Image (cartoon, rainbow, N blue to C red; front, side, top):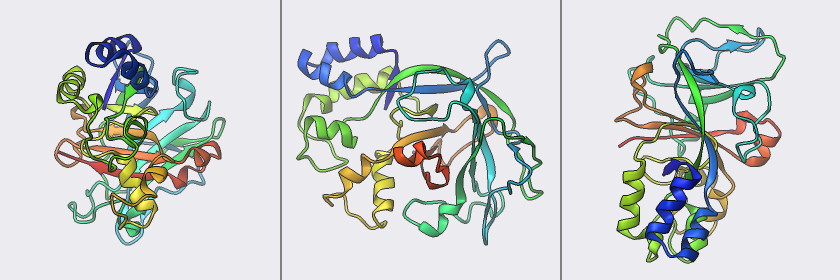
Length: 288
């Protein structure tokens, strides 16, 4: 929901919450790496668009019956600020993100978490450190996005109060995904958070910044079968089993627009991340 320095977020919490509530809320912050468009003086940690570097044996990701996926972004794990994140990313190697963006079929087929047949429309590939990889031309059906370098900025991230972990801390009996009667849901505090930082942005790790509902709930519903109701008692625990791997916002510099100024999200279970099972990452997207 919000990202910034620890000092800025502490000052914000202390202004609107009681000392005890502020400390509990601050304890739920998570470190993330925000990615912004880099300049010539920045150290690039990856890029939006352009062409991916793939090993010779790797096939370009394809959604059977639909077509090739577009290359969205790459992140060089070795270039990320060390010791910042609380997720078990590899220390070396590159993460490559692909998505079926509608170029091939004029947006007819959608990649949706509730539709398992569409899950092949979003992928994460991991190229291990030391593995030989070369730039790969895109399939002729695709027009690559302009290459835009990304620079990294470590920040703390705060989740919205209806995020499963925040709800569990302050109102465990409240229905998932809804506002509840507590100071962290007070309109004054919410407006202060939105005014502090209303942008989604590009990010690795930390709390996701959803455009709509918590993305963890969308993924949990899909993992539980797709038609899981919001009041299913399994939903909070399942949502808590997923962490943000990456979010990619709409970006003018790269000619990327996801729906109506939306964002793409890849989430993964910590155990799968530790085992480098990036093929098990799940995807969702949201727009205004």
